[in-house]
Image 1 (cartoon, rainbow over the protein chains, first blue to last red):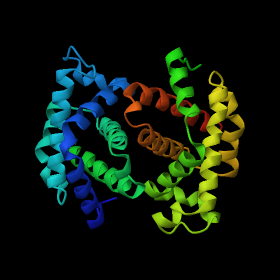
Image 2: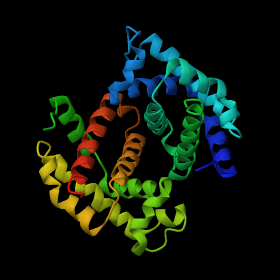
Image 3: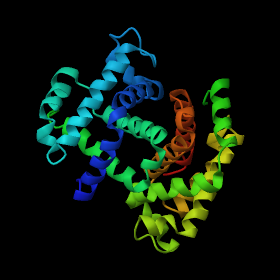
Image 4: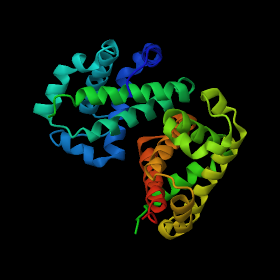
Length: 143
Length: 147
């Protein structure tokens, strides 16, 4: 399910609109991940505070959305563009790739709450494909 | 047996009490057919599903969306017995409709997005967790009679 030119254009247009809220989106999505899928918290057992106002959660949400921004800029070759991040996730973080899907869903939910008029079904399918391809690129170096 | 906290029950009944079924049902089903196009396989007799516009203006799809959403009312009224409540519907989806049970989760995800868009900031993380737990229980019950 690779990205068509239309998918890429749609994602870029949406990103241009929402990127000013990227930090807030990231923090909210991460907190939702922990709340809706508590098993995801195991990767953050070293944090004392996993609450919605936690500075760790906010900082990490910002970092994650930085990765999404990178992916948007490398949308024509996600595998190559995210190679370093993939190695980090594969060899250091060793996050089970199933979690990428869960976070992607949370990101979509946050965008739906914040930009309901902008996440039409036509835009949703493009963004869903993009996040799926992002997750795939992130999993590239796993094995 | 699924355990529901009082908070979860309140959240879930709260969501449905404010829900515009005639709007949300069609929107959720349309979104599912557009975002996961392979789900269109079950709607061959529903007419033109050729593109997003056609799907969104298809009256049969809209009516069916309402039917499906009202189907969730059964779970709402029998939250402590969802498994048994959906036994018949599970057989129907398996034996007659031949729906791949993975698709239930896809529709559930689309419904979550539609509800999130409607509720905005009121769709908190806690609300999302309760709603998704409810949908997961329904999805599991619907898939139970497959063999």
